[in-house]
Length: 357
Image 1 (tube, rainbow, N blue to C red):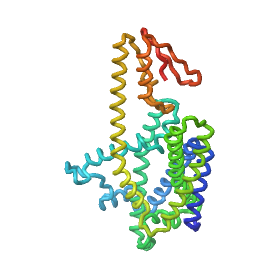
Image 2 (cartoon, helix red, strand yellow):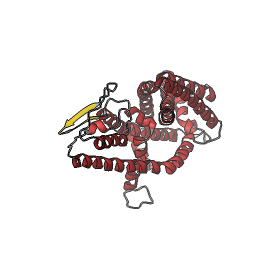
Image 3 (cartoon, one colour):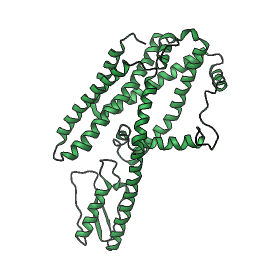
Image 4 (cartoon, rainbow, N blue to C red):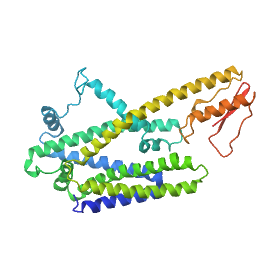
């Protein structure tokens, strides 16, 4: 689109995304993504408007052409599980989305930055509501490109990779200023994917591995490690992109989806099973702890929102171990005050008085 060498382009995006992620962490990731999503969707919408202006009949004409060519076929109204039946699509997508929404650190890290559970839930619903119109718009843009070059086959080379059709349209049909906006959207989409992954992987390694193996390490040391990991991961990601760009692949997107499908099939079921197992374990431990309180005649009442390990990643099972230990160690356990934790709460009910973290 720009005439810039593809390797220079990859290096530019890799260096910039890595740099602001190292400097700003999750805050830089979120705020740059906010700007990038508007640029990306705005550029896609602008391209769609230009395409509709060049198609006979506009939007109605595009829908008529797509319908006649079966471009809008999504599922079959059938009970046959060997086809794309409606129930297969719905159930399959439900379970397919459980992994990123519950365990993908690149997604979950955004919810962990919110102030409480209610704010995190609003983030989930906002994402769910935005993904429907944005996905429909992008699919319609793809159908629009099909209709545009179907009417003008001389503008499209048969040997052109599928990933290059949209950039070709931008360079051929959009004015310089508008093309620049859409190109910025394409760059934004790439950088948004990169920065989220860099920050999430570096955070997971630092918190889940280094932090547990070195509990005495202070926050300053962990921060230095996270920044170093982000820089190394950014270099590795940029190098991988350069290697992929050198391969003769008809569609990098299809190749990427194929690799991700292998990963999801291998590990996705394990992750979902683990979450269901943890949910049952937590529920069982909560019931046992409640019975223990009542059996001891203490009548403790634990505030449920205070038990949620959303804000600082405290584990529910560790909390229940502490509660059980206090109940066993004394008939009337004294409250434990955490002056360094503004989120500590104290509950008092009957004869049982516990500080719930």
